[in-house]
Image (cartoon, rainbow, N blue to C red; front, side, top):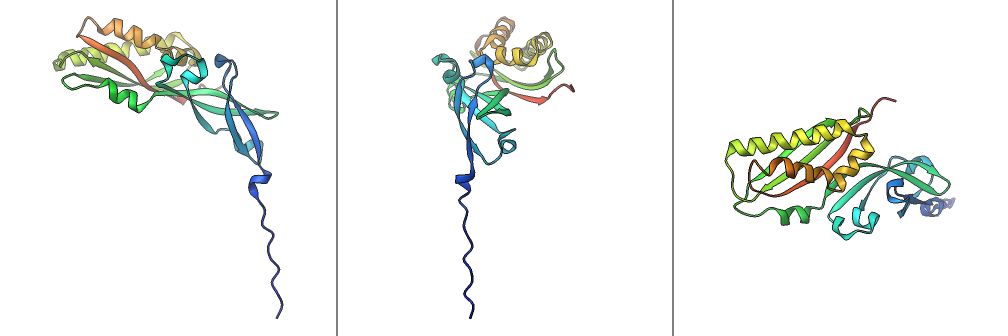
Length: 196
């Protein structure tokens, strides 16, 4: 009887390289973590999330999560770009209270560089409001988001969403329609980039 040769087991982890994940220039190319891959091509297109407070050093942004995609590898660095942002779920739950009207608006807009972005926004009214006012608030929210998108390129538009500039503009637009407690961008995602 011939003894079977044992197959050599190869430890795949030993073959992997670790790449430092680098945030975009907006965040001073901060190293936010590492990702393993055997080949550079395997690391490309991976999506990672980072807390905006960690990226900026400002605690007031700790409820905002930034979505980044690895676009290319340079030496041992995985270069990323912003593809979206979202608000932390626990923060969202704290915002909503009983006996308040929550007005949501989900809109697809096109930026100045012809990039399509899906944006979800919410307005929390100070009291319960009637349907006509709710409709007016939703319309005003959409108008502000759409107008701001048309004026800015994708990266600038995303900055304005993440740092609250557009939320402030929406608040000023809707505060005369109904008593408003809070206005937030809860999610924004890159849908389609302009054909280069």
